[in-house]
Image 1 (spheres, rainbow, N blue to C red):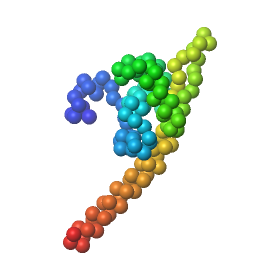
Image 2 (image 1 turned 30 degrees about the horizontal axis):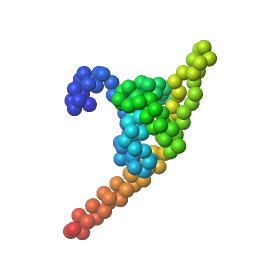
Image 3 (image 1 turned 120 degrees about the vertical axis):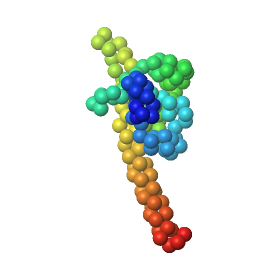
Image 4 (image 1 turned 30 degrees about the vertical axis):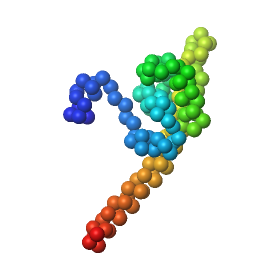
Length: 135
């Protein structure tokens, strides 16, 4: 990755995003804003044991949109069954930023990935058989 992007770009941080999320965007029924919000949630998921909890304001500032736009996107991601919002409170009993459980996304993309891999396997098999039969 350093060879492609440069050492400082990688040192500044990166997020691993399964390509199937991008390729299956239409199947996941998410628009461009919802995908961007989802990518920012993924960028805040630093520890496997702890789901991300960025504030809507932070995500909005990064995207250059209103917090209301981020809120609508999160509601849409919830309705689509890709994210589960969990309310958190701070030490004073007030509300802290929500935690975003991404397990529903993981559960949703696994069978899509399986289907994608099977389709690729079949396509490769067909290409091999056409090559053996002289086209």
